[in-house]
Image 1: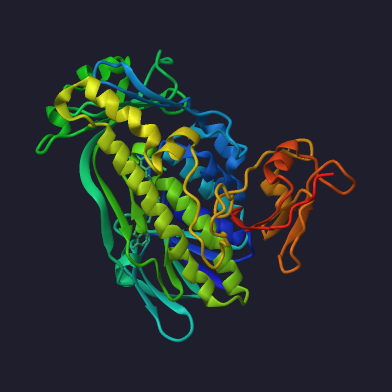
Image 2 (image 1 turned 60 degrees about the horizontal axis):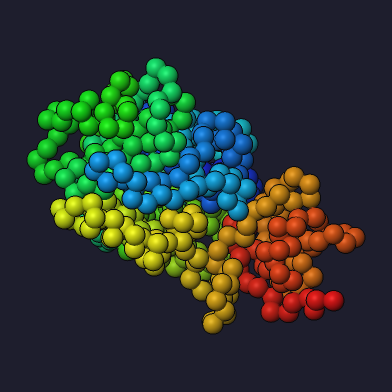
Length: 477
Ligand SMILES: Cc1cc2nc3c(=O)[nH]c(=O)nc-3n(C[C@H](O)[C@H](O)[C@H](O)COP(=O)(O)OP(=O)(O)OC[C@H]3O[C@@H](n4cnc5c(N)ncnc54)[C@H](O)[C@@H]3O)c2cc1C
């Protein structure tokens, strides 16, 4: 059984790693030979790091990233309007990590080279994908020789980015989830550490909203919204960087980006599926574009591996059903944060302070901004959430506290379905390895997990999302 992954960006290579680690043969194709060298993403949250953990690269990622202090919204005079802290979190990794995307891409490619069932082929452009009965046929154009070749696969993942060819070939379109904006991205290198706040600073100024953050090592990133018709050449960068204390840093790259807010209207045509930027585009104000793509890959890899091993193809219907609403929700939060950066209009800081004071009460944004929690998946075939159970963990990731004296829960659970119980009755039809948590014989010690389980048993999917909760609790003695 072979899967062809179109696109060796971070999402495609992560998907390939996750499939290869489940024993699937994977061929990754990219029009370029090397990883894309320009920095784009700089932030990943702790949920995304659990995806990298499953792909076997999270510890290496910790070596190329650094934890961030959080997010500050400032007024145009540099006064703090709202501050959201980031720290250790419940997922076993820092809630916010800063890094440069090319470092991550190199790391992912190295890990893929170590997987015996995975191959990466660069310099080939996918030009056609066709499905009749039987395998999917993929036509590639070799950019060095000009030759065309036809390959066959049992499934194809379109991880080919914003201008996805696979998306076009399956007849999918993009739906706008907010207006596009033009921003200038400035990457900086400083001779020594700059005396700046160690988190992300977003300046709420209707005339010139801006973002500044330390990345990793001696690298920094600044972003400025461009007015219509404006370009980098017309800006006094030293003056724009001075309020951040970065006027002396060397500008190593400037690039103009059009930040779109879009979600694809179709994520699957039979055995061809979309992941990552091919399926959704978001403004980067909450640093979630890549994080969304990593979740797509994580939630799809085990389903696809199961289907290739004989499960019903209908399992793949859950890909769009689960991922599209989640992606759309986070794109909306990003659009909202972008609006808040200009909130209060030109009425001044006092009005803006009022608008931003309401951030904590806005549905969707409060959880994300305060606790770095993304919305739970909606109820469906693989998410059995009873109605009227407020605070139910179903549809969200199980936390990952230390377990059994310092191990990580996901590593202990392994790649399949699992059941966690702290004395709760385990329904007989629940699949997977059963992990009993507590201090008794045969139980794994984790006081945090015992507290979280509150006597319940939970069914955990291979992507660590809680699929169901057992209604039968242990009776306290
Ligand atoms: C300025 C900026 C800042 C950002 N900041 C963040 C952030 O802080 N946090 C975050 O999570 N995200 C951020 N993002 C978003 C993040 O960079 C993207 O979401 C991520 O790169 C998407 O990965 P991908 O693998 O889906 O697509 P890509 O990285 O675009 O990879 C697609 C790959 O497909 C290949 N390809 C395309 N078409 C074909 C074809 N026909 N045949 C063969 N190969 C093909 C391409 O060569 C490419 O290698 C930011 C983006 C920008 C621009």
